[in-house]
Length: 95
Image 1 (spheres, rainbow, N blue to C red):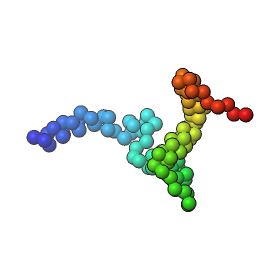
Image 2: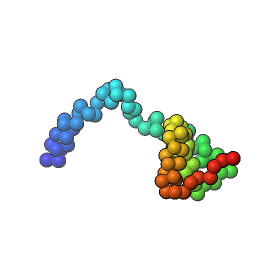
Image 3: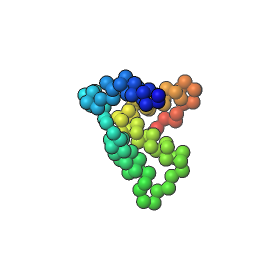
Image 4: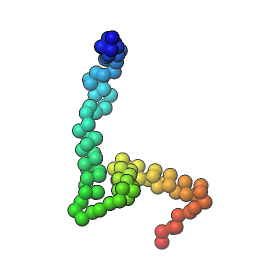
């Protein structure tokens, strides 16, 4: 009985599981692209010789590097400034 359910599920999802359909939409198949991104964003910064990071510190650096790599830095700072102003907690102005 479980085999029949598995076969039925496979038949129902076969069209969605086609690699060619997914590739045609510009999506990646497999994890190599994600792993390479992690190596370049995380490994290059957090694993340099002599560097020791706390987990919270590493998470903040990784988040910032991801924002920078995705070219979202300007929108990040606009959002941060707006959220601080909304809290009435203004940021000190640079000289």
